[in-house]
Amino acid sequence: MMIPVNEPLIGQREMEYITECIRTGWVSSAGRFIGAFEDAWASFCGVKYGVAVCNGTAALQVAVGCLDLQPGDEVIMPTFTIISCAMAVIQSGGVPVLVDSDPTTWCMDGNQVEDKITSRTRAIMPVHIYGHPVDMDPIFSIAEKKGLYVIEDAAEAHGAEYLIGHEGQDPHWGRCGSLGHISAFSFYANKLITTGEGGMVMTDNLAFADKARSLRNLGFRPERRFYHTELGFNYRMTNMQAALGLAQVERIDQIIEHKRWMGQSYNQLLCDLSELQLPTEKSWAKQVYWMYGVVLNDNLEMDAEGFAARLQDLGVQTRPFFLGMHEQPVLLERGLFKGEHYPVAERIARKGLYLPSGMALTETQLEQVSEKVREALI
Image (cartoon, rainbow, N blue to C red; front, side, top):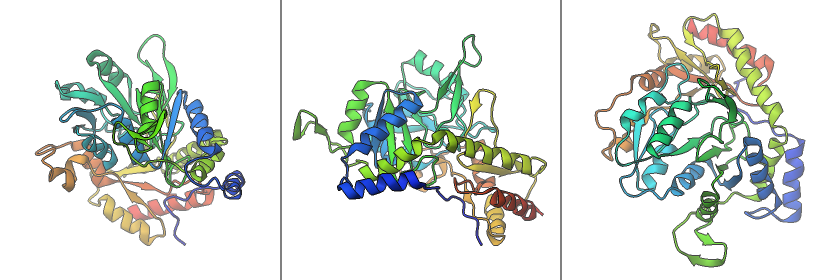
């Protein structure tokens, strides 16, 4: 039997809340669970306002939309991320500008950001990769010095934490999603908190929160319905989705504990394999191992595609790492990133994949996966 790369864990509380939606008829984009989910997730993350939307890509588009980018305005982001990040900037009239990854965390290298700043730069978009936070201190410093916004993509880092000011005199922990001027979450089926599809925009800025609520709802104004001063989107979350999410927020501590157990267990079982680079956890980070990624060493002729094929034959499903934005045909066709190369992102894209990492993964399955990894490397 194939061990799936991800399988969500849906409990009794979720069933109770979903049943309430069906029983009461509140199945669309109104109902008690939407506000309750927004408030609960905002409170957990340490942010004032949460605005639920229909998916994580929509959350990024709304977050970027709150900045009122002008044509040609630039947003600096990692090349190693999902295309949703670049799409959100392009669809707002902006231009994505890329930096490479840190070779150990696989997150954007904040030390490369300053060299990419121009007179058109408006924002920096750090993306927490596979559950490990970006080193945010260099980004905070640059953003403050240059007057830039920080749009935080926390889609893969539910509950992860970052030690703010870790090289200074007064370090303190902050949760991912609370670190930027505005942030975006995804609640896709493979995330720690899932609503099937779904996302949320988070901010402490009331003006951003109000604009996000308008943008997700066709640009409706609270004082006058069907009167529009700007174009918005139909990005509303349903009450049923929110009910699913709220039930999971109620047990978020247990979810994080399970994910950290999963990652640490893989580490223990695979740490002696010189052929693999395993996920790290920096001293300034509390990572949540959203997906357990591994990168094949350069001295192996096998690439990630070949490794995945061997694991598939052995009954283990995997997924490839991201392909950098600078190698995406649809973006190159738009004239973006011509001649740009980012060696770290290129290497891990070709050599990296992630192993079964879902909430329903059992200890027995995890041990079986680890055994098959060894077998596939022979």
